[in-house]
Picture (cartoon, rainbow, N blue to C red):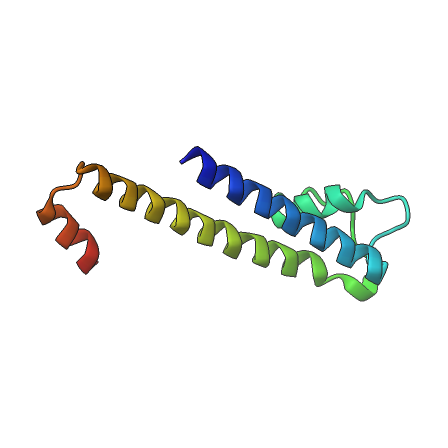
Amino acid sequence: MIPTVSVLMLTHTVEVFAWAAAYWILQATPPEAGLVYFAFVNFATLGYGDIVPTKRWLLLGPITAMNGALLFGWSTAVIFEVLRKTLALSGDISDDKKAVVQES
């Protein structure tokens, strides 16, 4: 599980840096704003509000938040699938339980 979660965390960090690069290319934040901080706050849906995008790009923050929420949900599904397969391979899930898990 540790490798799976580590890879997912690294992937999310890369995604945040991609959003920060997009903010920089579009000049969507004030010049004094920390782009990576702003991207992390939006991506993690914290919504501090201490940095506000420029008027032209106001919707970019909520779009980043939606993207982060969707990707965190996807990561949760990946973690559960890896756990399920690990338990199935180790024999901790009996055949009856495997059938129930596969049907749902």
